[in-house]
Length: 390
Image 1: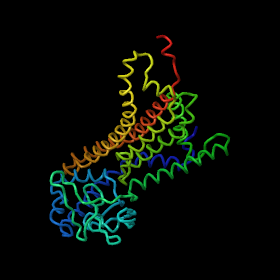
Image 2 (image 1 turned 45 degrees about the vertical axis):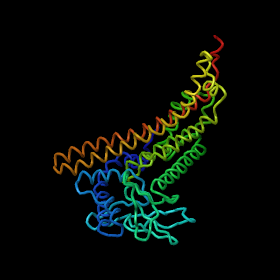
Image 3 (image 1 turned 90 degrees about the horizontal axis):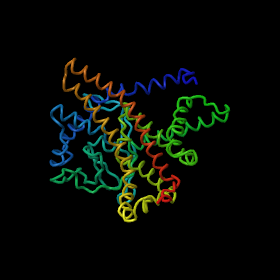
Image 4 (image 1 turned 60 degrees about the vertical axis):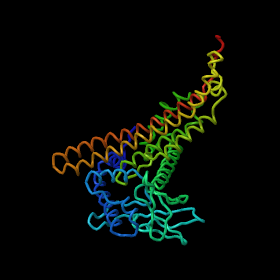
């Protein structure tokens, strides 16, 4: 099979391979932009003293790097391509819609927050965007935020937030890419007698891999087809979002616990809603063991039903989140060393780690899909007549 028959295919593959390298230009721009926002907010006097002290700009370089790293992994209500370090201007800035439920539906643009510097007003209600957690809180016209003395978290009321955030945008983009990509792949099979053409040539081996190396070995030849649509969707969904996370756009969707929780819940529901009676029999009345032990093992097995999706959620979240933290921290070393030797070593280490992150992007998609298939297989396992020998 000739994958790169057309030059555009090679260019697309090359862009994916080199995407992490361009991520090195992102830290200084976002760090200085975030610092400019915090400095402006400290000087602006729009918030009261307690709020200003809680969100003051870090003074030393290590604290600034720590603040940037934390800011990088959070979701946001807007995004931009780059910023002017001196003037604090943002280029390619795209505000996203804010949708709140607070005494009715409140809809307005995130540009009203001016990157968290201003108080947004909607139908007589006032809201402020907190830099530390990226959440929206209800406030007064002055933007007052009261904070808990022990935790330092705002105690203001939080409206129900249905906003279109940066993560939601890239989930939609990923869904559209997958829809058009695999729709064209399916159409090419019909037109060319089962032979893929176009961009589908790149992804066809992955589709076959999921079927032959994940679905059939773990679920079985008999039952694997009814799970293939979900397994393919979850594999490419996680893979594409992981790759987006390596670009300068600063997307951290699969490093968000709520996203991995949603994916794990889907696997949990499909596993238990499609399970046969043999699956539930092994949980509540395990064959092949004494009856007294069956009573003891039943709650343990039932607990395992919940632990399995929990492990899926934590594994994907922890690996992607930790990868972003480590990569940003290593890049931050360039600003700490401030020498050609230290910066060169940090750059080289960050480059190697970025290449490793490409492997992790594929590996985590494979592990989540493989474990999901393993759970589906156990839910459809046939009875082996263990009790026939007792």
